[in-house]
Amino acid sequence: MGKGRLEAFSDGVIAIIITIMVLELKVPHGEGFDALAPLVPILLMYALSFIYVGIYWNNHHHMLHAADKVTGPILWANLHLLFWLSLIPFTTGWMGENHFTAAPSALYGFVLLMTGAAYWILQQLIIAAQGPHSLLKEAIGGDWKGKASPALYVLAVLCAFWSPRIAQAIYVLVALFWLIPDRRIERVISRKEA
Image (tube, rainbow, N blue to C red; front, top):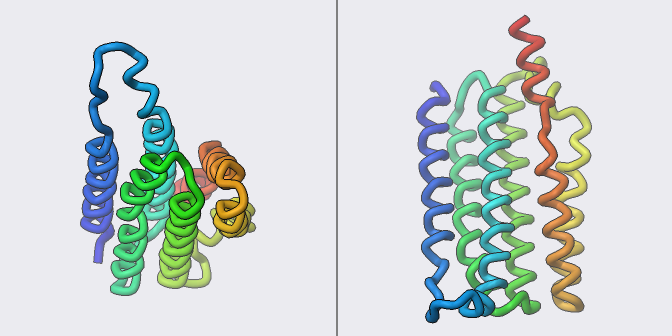
């Protein structure tokens, strides 16, 4: 099966996820800038979650660009990833509305952890489908960010019950890791095409 349909479906679901997040932003009552003050935590959570969804969309695009075919297990793994991504608007809203308290902060981290696990599963299935000379396997190499992120999410979930602010800092730190452009897949594909 070709990958075009999978890419289009995934792009559509991710666009809906972002739309749901922005629709959760409520217009403040009042005409001055001071009316925005109660919304600051919600806006901060929206920005962080938008960045996370954008990171997944970007990396998903690159990962599928390296894939040469799509199998049934890949389709299901992709749905698994989209399921966890679709929970980000809920956890974003809950954490923002409750000003970064323990339980919402921990659940946010758990959803990020499960989203990362789902992404890893999808990545491994694409590598398996490509066989021993997988472009994706060559591109990801040691993948230190992929190994560090789950450990940091677990740490953040645990910290959320002690200090939600430390958990928030860890979530921002992991997002910053992934914001740095990763050209590994592009380099491997360019070498193959040359």
